[in-house]
Length: 449
Image (tube, rainbow, N blue to C red; front, side):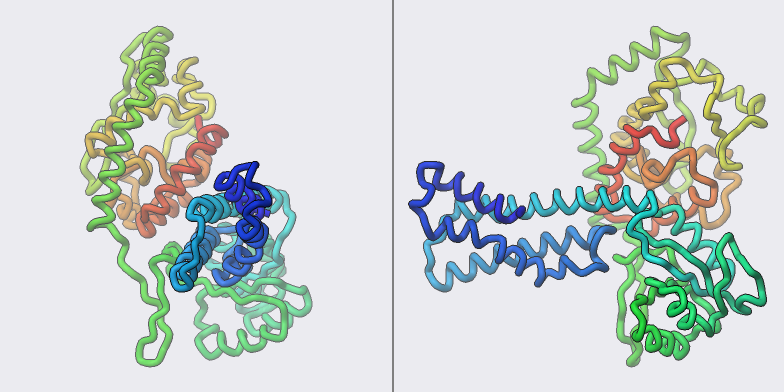
């Protein structure tokens, strides 16, 4: 349908309503575009289930299929010296691409909402040791939109060890996985690193599962490293995982810095009236300065003065000790949903993250990035473990994975995991995805208080 609509619009724009029927060849091309479009999508493998519904691969394959079709049309018209109306081609194919991406995105969002409500689930069996099973189970529960419904686990020792673990029934031991899959009609088997399941054992498990409908997923030991950094490389005849270094320097980092500063400058100019209006609202409704400046820890552990619109009464930072016992944070961060220090205007500013807009000036100065880990206080840094210091390899961000993943509702372990994940897997694509999701997170106001 997307290709058909795009073809007809391309035909009408090129030849106009008066030309309908007069250019039979192009009308046929417009009506035949869906066939070519589906063929290109099939060649681009954009219908394979493993690429659908989650991640950027689905959209990349749509782009690849569109580029393939455009290149094919150009090559064929040149080789056969066909007089192709360029106006039709440059409208129909890009429009078909855009409409396809929009409908796939809408379809994905609809499916994610349904999965959050328990529909369209794949029954999943977790296989491994207790610590790994518990961590993966928590991750799957957090991201229910992936559609995995964990029905149980297989642990060393099996049912004799415990009837349940982490709220999951123990359905067998590591040698009974295939029997459990057949007995419970499992769709997905997720295997975690285990000494008992070495190379030969995993190979036999894969062979045995070929007679079932279950797919086999292997969780690597380094679960926070995303796909773009992992490649299969043949080494001495063995397929080994090659983990690339995180891209923390070089041209892409320079591109990020340039994009950050130029976007921040344009953003300040574009919303200057809003900034002035918010500053007046803060000044008129409560006594004290308009801006709140606080020392935060940035890249390489250097401190800087982070700017925010003042959303609390003057001197609020000196009242933390008196309210510490009432903290609803995660053990390290101080947070209160009904903080008595917040002003009336401050509640609105914090609800929609408007108090953070002055950080655009920090981005222009180079202290912060548009996207990055949350800028911490020095008191928080003193409680960090070794893993959390990885976040200082990059600049803190105006927004980040923490902003689109729950903000103040996150546990401390989740905050650590999210920040480290961002540093390990940084890319411009990830930054654009986070910026896109930030708008929705701000409007929903989830975890903002």
